[in-house]
Length: 258
Ligand SMILES: [Zn+2]
Image (cartoon, rainbow, N blue to C red; front, top):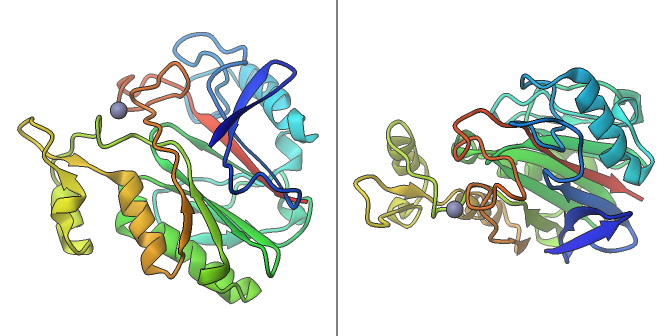
């Protein structure tokens, strides 16, 4: 993963997805106009920021790719494993669910985050993409695996062909958990002790990125880029629901098939 700056506006890109067939970005919290605690590039109207600020921020961020709120497909996130197959006909809509996939060139996918992990999938053979959102609930209900199956069903994608990338999320360094996370991880994953790590405190810390990586691996995906950036450690770069005790914004991502 590397920083890209265009017009002094920083955003992150995965090395493996920086290819002519794709446009993509994980925006930071920098470069917008929202005041604290949404400072400054908050892209979500689901927090108590003003809609005018959010729409201005989207024009700035999505505008890098010639898009705006009405020329992208969003997602109404519910921490589940439902995947929506979308096209440009879905522009300006918010399908219910935590993943959207498309094989239509030019169709822009976008999604917002504050500690949960983003999942990017690209099928270079059938030319299709997917963008997903998985926090601990998404990892437990295997949202990454559901995305792989949805792309197989819709586009004939073979898991072994997929390029996957997992965006910045809350790291094992900062993600202390209790019940029901502990029980759910034990019920869901093999070797749960490797995902619930003892880092010295009374309670274990959950390794969300590794859980999502295993979901992809179990679905047959072999090529997976992971940036190892913690949103709670890096509140200079990202919004963190945990580190900022819920009073924060949402940073965005965008994914487009050229
Ligand atoms: Zn951390």
